[in-house]
Image 1 (cartoon, rainbow, N blue to C red):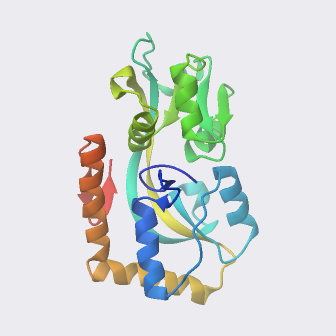
Image 2: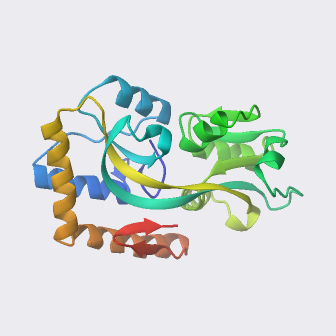
Amino acid sequence: MSEPPANFVNLSGEVDGYVTDVVKAMQRKLKDKTQIEVMPEVRVLYTADKYRNVLFFSFSRTEGREHKYHWIKHVLSKQWLVYARRDSMIAINNVEELRAISGIGVVRGDIRSIWLENLGFENLHPVTNHSQNLRRLMADRLPVIATEKLTTHYLAHELGLSMNTLKVVFVLNRSDVYIAMSKGTDTNIVQRWQMAAQEITDTGEMEQIAQAWVKRIKGSEGIEVSLENGVLVF
């Protein structure tokens, strides 16, 4: 799934991102040469639930998902935000006011979409990716979208938009994001990946990757991102 800067396809057509770099570091430790694929989130969920031996990222760890997957490594923590156009009069103070909005742009299979569905929201307008939602918002086809800070900054930059044209109107929640594996995966395989994750932490490689992305994010987006125990926080 594409959610920059964690994982996305860059302008050269290559799979890029902070968590992508973490996974590649683990692959080098394991001498694993499996090709990384970018899929729509609905397909990621289907693949993770149906097949064994699937590693996937970047995936929010929630109570409802806790026992459905193997959790390999915590890589970042983030807020879930609701954005509106800067020129709108929208102001949201609580979840019930959000429920009254005429439409909320979400991504199918995205944790924010699932969370709102579980709360009984009936005003969700799902699409395949976050870029589509941002375009719909700016075309005044949606009043708000549910996403997160860095993805919105990256996509706005990609689309030639200024973040001054957007505003955060509500903080939905926050989540810890992980690299995970499908539940049916052999225990030995899970343990090998967990050991590789621990090894890149112990050797400082995880810290180096995270620091490099802190600089890259600040350089390209001008956003200050904190680093706590090797985990990006925004």
